[in-house]
Image: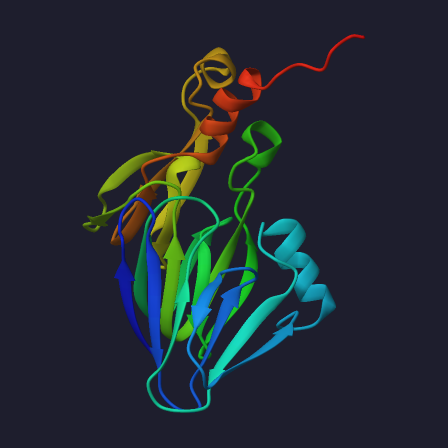
Amino acid sequence: MQTEVLFSPAYATARLTLAAGESVRAESGAMLAMSPGISMETSTQGGVLKGLKRSLLGGESFFMNTFTAQQDGAEMYLAPSLPGDVVSWPLDGQLFVTSGSYLAASSGVEIDTRWGGGTRFFSGEGLFMLRLAGRGEVVLSSYGAIHHIDLAPGQTWTVDTGHMVAWTEGVQYAVRKVGGWRSTLFSGEGLVCDLTGPGRIYLQTRSQDAFLSWLIPQLPKPSSS
C-alpha cells in the first residue's frame, strides 16, 4: 500500500494505491472515491463483541469496511469526517490511538480497544483508546493540523487530553489534573497527560470538545411557546 496525503493540513485526504490482492481496512464512511477493480466487504472485524467494544468504548464504528484490489495500481481516496490533517504511519509493533483518530490500516494490522485511565468520568476525553499492533501501514486523522514530537529517553511533555492523537509503544503516559480541583473544573483545561519518551507522539491543533463547548451555547434556544 502506497499512501499520499493531499490538501494538508486543513482538509486532508489520503490517496491509497494498492497492489493486486492487497487489502485495507477503513473506518465506516471514510471512503471518498475509488477506481474500478476494488471490492468492498463490510464486517465487525472480529465478531459482534469486538465490534461493540470498539464502538461503545473506543469511539469508532461498529462496522469496518475492507477494500481489496483486484488489479495492480487500483486507487482509492479516504477522508475523515472532521476538517483536519491526515498522516501515514509505517507500523512495526504497537501504536496507541485516541478515540476518533483511526482512519485506515493495511491488513497486517490488528485493531483492539484498550483501557486508558478514568478520564472520561471527569472530562469525556480518552477513557479508552485503540491499540494497533502488527506490521503494515496506518492512516490517522485529526481535527486541525497534526504535529509530531519525538521524545528522547526520559523526556516528558504535558498535553491536554483533547489534543492527543497517537503515540508509540515506548512512550509512558499518566493522566492527571492540570492543577487543583478548581482549576480542573473551571479553568477550561480539564485533565492533561504526561507523556515520557522514548518515542513519538502526535498532537492535533484543535479539540472537538473545546469546539463543542463554544458551539453549543451559540445554538438557538427552543421557544417557550
